[in-house]
Length: 320
Image 1 (cartoon, rainbow, N blue to C red):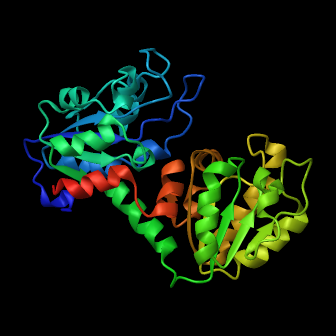
Image 2 (image 1 turned 30 degrees about the vertical axis):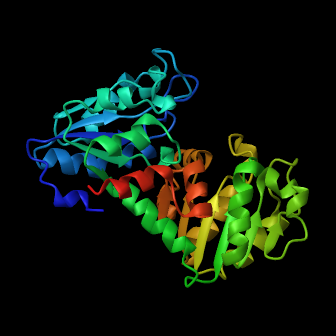
């Protein structure tokens, strides 16, 4: 796979698949980190004379509506891109063919474009038209942030960077169980908080340290915080996914804030990710506390479990 930097963008049209899914149910932009992750790639194209067609999806919708229109993102890109040579295409999911892996839809949105760039790591586990069909139609590349995602997640999976401590929170046991099982093979310690700490199947397993005390069952208590701190400060590498409490309520955010502070002071190389995690970090101005923050949630966990994503494989097969 060639680097995007091997292409001269001048006079060329690029279709750039970005992670635009940042608008909440109230129709407001909930976080900006995912939008910011595409800026390096987009500005490289624009600064070198190319034109960028920005595409992506917002929400779980198949009907056109104002709430989830990409028009809401125009002002962000106008402020943050170094040229006006771009266009934001409408929400791909406003057309039902996007999720049906429809070749006619992929051909339609690729018309008039010279290259395809996948800068949407967070959706690259989905077998959708814009993820897996566009690389079959256009010469294709990974975006710069997507490349950083793979490099950083591979760093976590590299068994030489030990001790490795994994911290898992949240409530979605089914999506996180495969990741936990995979990490049991390579991690030194797996610290579990959030609702997962009450999961019976995780009890009495070597390497797994469950939170043992709680504030109203919605946050980890001081005993668990101090136990987790000991393992964090013994670590050389740390991976974290999922808040350790009901952080949308400030009353139950203390445990997660303390753990973030310990991670930043530990000196370990730290990677975290997931939608709820990013929202919490951005809201509390904590993103800078980590070595790298992944835009992925399910895609990040799938890559850590399988070391591949269908969208990544299609780019690699495309031969650029």
